[in-house]
Amino acid sequence: MLSKCANPVCLSEFLYLRQGKLFEVEAHFFGAPSRREYYWLCDQCAVKVALCFDWEAGMIAVSASRSTGHRRMSTIPQSSEKAIFGAIRVLIRPFRPLSAMRNSADEGHGVD
Ligand SMILES: [Zn+2]
Image (cartoon, rainbow, N blue to C red):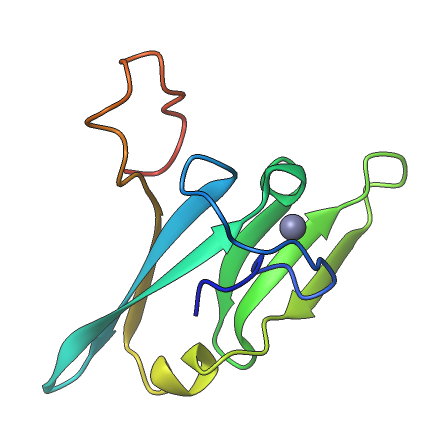
């Protein structure tokens, strides 16, 4: 599932954990165990694309044009759309598997 950038219009392949940004998506269900999915945005997309959850479309990539401010939403075509269907709560947070190996200068403006 982490074979490429989560941005549907980007073709960057996932090669190194240290590149781009990883996100953990936790879906909670009523009367069922929660599920976790992981998404990766490449370096270029991480600065301009946000991962969001839409109750109708599932996981979407939202990009904002700096010049016009127009927001473009693209559905992320992955199995996750089905995996999180029926969720009562979906949490998206930055996931840093290497944070323990990095120094504390790692940017921390996410929604932990
Ligand atoms: Zn990308």
